[in-house]
Length: 293
Length: 280
Ligand SMILES: Nc1ncnc2c1ncn2[C@@H]1O[C@H](COP(=O)(O)OP(=O)(O)OP(=O)(O)O)[C@@H](O)[C@H]1O
Ligand SMILES: [Mg+2]
Image (cartoon, rainbow over the protein chains, first blue to last red):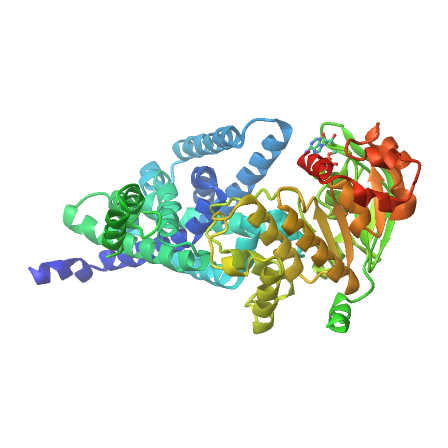
């Protein structure tokens, strides 16, 4: 029984999948703190779809997929800014138009010029078949995000909280904005390879949202979210071995389960605690104590 | 203490606005041909009716709106350089931040120090001390660990004032610091502003509390799309100028219409009239 639990570790592809998933999960979770607070959920979804044509073009010409994705992300962000300036449409409408256009172009390119890159890989990822080079790419991006956010999180936070004040104390808000978008795009590309375009956005939101419920301090969020995201992703990959089901599905459902638990039991923002306040004072305290336990 | 502060202020703070015109994207010209010079160690009151361009002037000084004409120089530098040198702090009329953000009152005030910190932005003991003092000076010391949204409107305003104090900038711009705060707090803030003036700061303060203006302002700028009058309070803050700025003698200042043109008479305005004035 216990030996069976260790089975997944006997296979190299499973070890790679768990390592890759854990890194991607933690790295997306780190960025999810900013995504959740800036209200960038839709932008995360947009980016994860907008990088597809870049990936397709890179595959056609045999270039690194990350490079193609980065170019597409920059073009998409520029396109969004351009359309926004030219109309008084709401931001979500502009995002919707731009990212579906990019995604459509990507689908068309992949179908017109068949390469080793298949459409199912783009949509659902291919964690179990992740190549060593891709794995190193994931580690590289993860390390980059860790270093950048580790050194600059206070400036990024100041910018996210109050951009005008950040500018008035001399911070370069344009650079900070570009940096966040750049890291977000990189995270999208790596997540694309693991859970696929359809589920990237879940990894870019759920851990940050969960951490937000658990703490009132941004610094703590930056620690809690990657833990939740990383552990959830490793556990998801591990579970998929036994279920023999889609890895992406397992990862995202596990992260959602964590979110639901936090939503119910969080010490301050949790549902039980809030309901507790409506009961007589003593009952409320007991509920809070139970929620904390 | 005062010498200390003066040393930290660096070169004498000043604001020069030259021939400034600002238009919003919809084409509305909010300010035209504004020319001003403000110097250190003085409190300048910025007065004008709603929509007269006070907030726009603040935003233009901070470089948040791009002028169609003219320029702003702060301490002889352009705005961006002055901001990088932490020469100017700004408290907007209303803070448009996300109040659900996971930051404490102390975190927010610490952000005022951030431009002065080293590469990793780790607060030093000195930074912590300044933040503590700033919270203390606005009477919010007991609220340091609260989440920023868990405050009343007036308390939020005081926190953002504390953030500006923590920046230790030579120039402090305050857009209507007295709206939404109680009378005692207003008097405390005025006391605070006087202290900053003695320490050599330059303060530009917009207000609708006309009765308080002669009380604490050394200079006054009367605005109505352009500068109606500017100069020492006694010269600029006259009933005739006020009537020109507001289009009619502003209510609550009927006593100004009395033959005596001495600004001191303003202090005799009945309290009820003052309140009416702050309310709008
Ligand atoms: N974002 C904007 N877009 C277009 N017009 C604007 C904008 N902000 C302000 N205005 C216009 O510019 C003029 C000056 O506005 P401003 O906010 O500077 O006035 P104010 O003197 O600060 O008024 P108040 O006393 O109400 O705060 C007003 O006529 C206003 O309608
Ligand atoms: Mg205003």
